[in-house]
Length: 401
Length: 233
Image 1: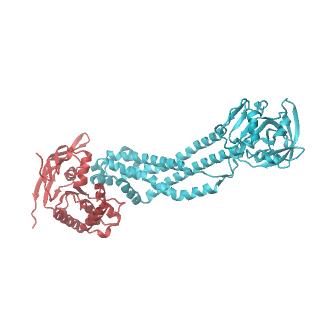
Image 2 (image 1 turned 180 degrees about the horizontal axis):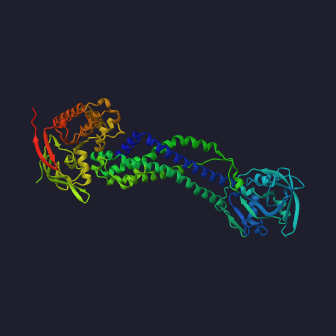
Image 3 (image 1 turned 60 degrees about the vertical axis):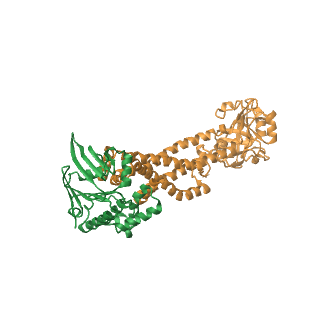
């Protein structure tokens, strides 16, 4: 208690030097929390969007389906029957048939995935109701990414070529019934969505599907022969990997910020012990043990982080709070880079994030404060009183200034 | 046999390493001090006055012989016990005041009481009393940088005296002061010595201090050359 009281007096009395350190440290605090908050917010938003647009509450994949191997698409379709059919009828599953095709927009050739979806489904956010239209051409909806890359817009007609289950080529016109905006690139890039029954007819695969998407909130999916259950952890693992790599990259930024802040404190501590020798001698003369003096200097250094927390809270809470409510807009479109990213990102500042950051900063500050303070234990009180204590490391440090 | 003196110094020697050899700062000192003395260790620079004061103050240890302060042999004390002795029984006044520049006058004087864990209300009263003794009640909230040298040394006296120690060790307390301030602080210390029977031991070669002290111990080359009591009218 005494050490805290004295340390606080020393810090407040040191004035500008203390506040410069505290400001630097508080900036590190706030930027670390801000940066991690953006990643966490992005993670949460991306997860929600992927669930909303694609993953639902989990999926069934036809046993041969491999989204990373287009050659499997010819064989990865099965009839939806038995328990799966019952679940589809109940509205807890929606089937999606996936095949390869080629479109010829503006005379160019573009390989795409053709996905058949029930226009009446409500399980994923794909605006499939736009497919419920009477037209000679096959109605199709596409994402803005696809529209941009194929230079297509609503109302455009384009030729689609596909191979049916027997390998025979067929072709027909599709009309763009709608263009939807999504933050999930895996339901947008190089693909078109058409009505499921039309695709089943085109492919001569009545009642068949490649995947089945379950309703959000589905706890468990029963095992079904010929189908593989893919739970949310699996379906979100790619996103998790991206966030993890971003977090790792962010660690470098944290490291630099922390280094700057801690260096300032370390420097202050090293110099303090050199410059405040007479004070240290006085402490000892007044009856403090060396251990108490070391504790005092360590607490003094560590208290920078306490003051930084308070200062950071004063400007950080309103600043970051406002961002969490209003969001941050990004000029670039994440979908262009194949990343699920909304135009406006809402950072998420969890209590755990804040507590962990504060604890880490406090711990590291204490360590860098204790390190030079240990030198005090080497001092002879008589030398300290006369300001005669010397140390090779200190001497070098001072000489370099 | 246990010493009955307040301070008893027996065959005290202190050597310091110097290159490959050693320098003897104190060479067989024999001294005793009693309660209420106002004594000065007098000698030129390098005569060993500060070394002797440091040993009495348990800031240093003898190389040979003994320094027994209030029944405790300084050389045999653990660091913790030595700190306890300084905290409870000894007060220090330094040539360069050694005040805490970031603290106010009040906080500087309060410092020894914080170490002793004196309860807040009592602490406040004791600091007030100490500042009254040295005539600095109007400077309570000033910082050392705002004070004159004489005022700083009076703060240092108040800090040394606030806990009412048995012994005050003053190392060249007037070295940085002009004549007027020197007399002022010496009168203050003399008054405190008379009022509280606190033993004051000075290390000095300042004639102004010498004119106040009632016992003069002359050190030459680490030895007591003369020890005389002055009877003042």
